[in-house]
Image (cartoon, rainbow, N blue to C red; front, side, top):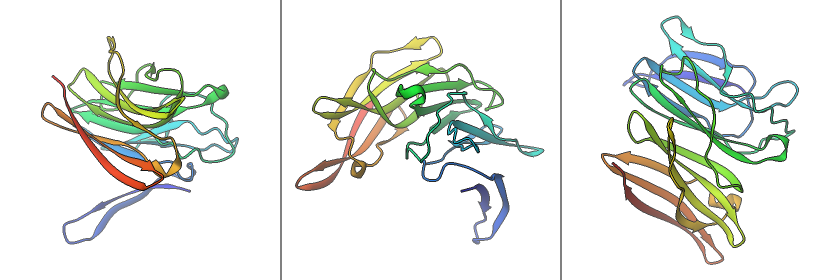
Length: 218
């Protein structure tokens, strides 16, 4: 599987069609955000040795940068975990959230960049100890981001969220009870002004329903 990029004009014409990575993980979702200096893409990479850590590329005036690791987790897995990263940006500040189970230790991480993705800061542990991943992230302001993930519980799973900044992390909070079943998919969040909207799939024996909730953050 390869990672490619193309721009689509208003008349449907494709331009700038390029391959940015010739070998990537098969099924993990890809994230992209637009910074003040151009797009940054994050995705689960795949080495010949089956190391499937998160990489990023960014578009500059000289073209696309070579793939680089967000962090050298060293997760070796002979199959796609279906658990991709997400990214959001505000100006030239961005946040990347991802899941890793390197050394059989599941973790959800967040890292910031203050220079449009030219460099990525240290990883911050976000989860509460038993994450299933399936992350999303939005920048709340230039200094902090809100991360969501699935945390496994004795009853199934919870959709949880935590506000994180370079200065530290706030307590996590439960958005909703849910399930870690594959059919529940991936919760998504979006910010509008001071409001953050959470959307997720609830799965019960009776079927599936889409749920939406709103929180306000200043």
